[in-house]
Amino acid sequence: MTDSAPLHISDLARLRETVAGWRRAGERVTLVPTMGALHEGHVALVAEARRLGRRAVASIFVNPTQFGPAEDFSRYPRVLDSDLDALARAGADAAWIPSVETMYPAGFGTRVEVAGLTEGLCGAFRPGHFSGVATVVTKLLNQVRPDVALFGEKDFQQLRVIQRAVADLDLDIEIRGVPTIREADGLALSSRNRYLSPEERAVAPRLHAVLAEVAAAARDGAAVAGPVAAGTEALTAAGFQVQYLAVCDAGSLAPVARVAGPARVLVAARLGRTRLIDNVAV
Image (cartoon, rainbow, N blue to C red):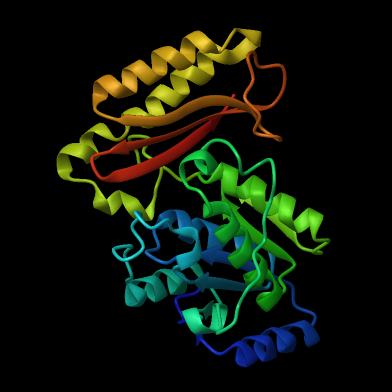
């Protein structure tokens, strides 16, 4: 790990020239896509990227196409100076920071759609979100052309969607999930946690605690309907507006009535104005 500042690149030709130079030197390249407002979870992703490859690129781009009209695009935190400091601490070699015009030039008309995996869970509440995610990630992968790209497991549905898009489009890139980094009280690190009031922040860890309770109750083939109903009731009583709480197959993300293989308990809920998501393995 190094504290030297990463290369700040906003020109696509320069990015490709830089990566090509690393390739000529026989160096392995990794990518960590982000929307900025970096926290220790992102730092852990970049540190893992450094471990897996000689060169680590982190992208910072607040992608407008994955936000709905009533979502928080305009107020999403943009703190580039502190982001670059975090990337320096993590040892990133380059920060790829494209403009909206670079990513979506005039006349842009292509979208990447992933069927099936995007239809439930967050996809049911955020129409078009995963198309925006799949499109921008496909572009980032084509721009950087890494050997490995890393994504946090907190956004588990996103991870599965990206893995499916990469497989379906025959992109020769490994997509690797990295376990969720949490606060000491269990709250998953998220850029949106800064939206929470002090009172909401005190309640927020209940989200992970309830997930753990549901996962424990769903083990060994028990029916999941009762634990899911109890968990939803507990979160509602704590002040959450639950959008979904579900036990799903870890591969297909299809809901399961009983756990018979690898599974995840996934949740999305609002606490005040802040939408939180989390998941745990069963």
